[in-house]
Length: 357
Image 1 (cartoon, helix red, strand yellow):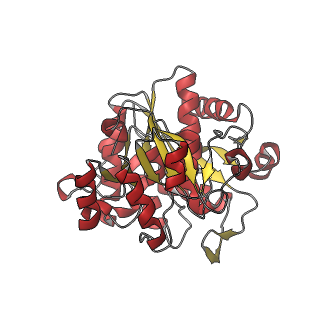
Image 2: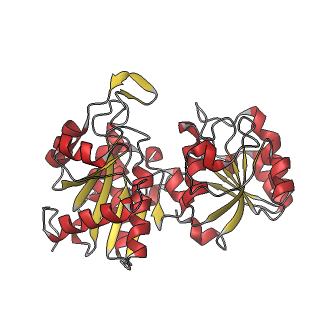
């Protein structure tokens, strides 16, 4: 999915982040607010942080100074020009909370298209599809998987692309793989490189990747093939393809999708993302985080790529000494540019065996 095809960008947008803005559950809302090339956030809906400033809630000085309000009605009053509502939270269980119904109805009645990352597909619900018809708005369910005709197993077609392929993997979920991928992409574009990127989650699609799928909705046998096709499509038009990874190879809950992405992208280099202070897995406290060394060894055993650099939440010097890898914090000034230079040197040195000429 490429949302650029559906909108005249950037689209004035309301971001629904109820009860999760500033917390890990609001990461889609955060990504849309901070990075989206499709949606121009004009207001955030979150009753818990209403009246505060995004820079304070997110602890990001670069966050746009848009109002945080308690309801969509308030958001429409603050941003009457809004043309879209982005649902920036995927609640536990994936169902649409009853408390959000009136907010979404109000947005549609005001002429806003709805962009949803929910596991429940609003476009397949008679109530929402009828309401969309009534108000002449559209529903984008970004988690919808490819149709059966677009599913195939991986066959190594990605080996023949002319572009360099760089995959971002992590030591856990929600450590910043999508953020690192986007920051690398933005740094590459600003430096004049011909770069494109592939999203494998709903946030990346909403941010504006050139191609994307919510890979956790793809049947297991076809993950590698779907990712291959995404990489092939972006590589046709770009010299550098950056691919967002998912979860981690050591994650007992989600490792299957991680391996599918790794084998489908078959990267020339990998950037590994880590939070050095995290010892237990997000939402899986019963499982420890295995760490950089174990993850790196598995990546290099299960693919032809080597880990080029570490994207860390910690102090780069400390983490570099600790792991014997170049380390960069992309939130530091010039961090993305430094990470891009490190990856570029790795590629130039030919420290990979992905099989591409």
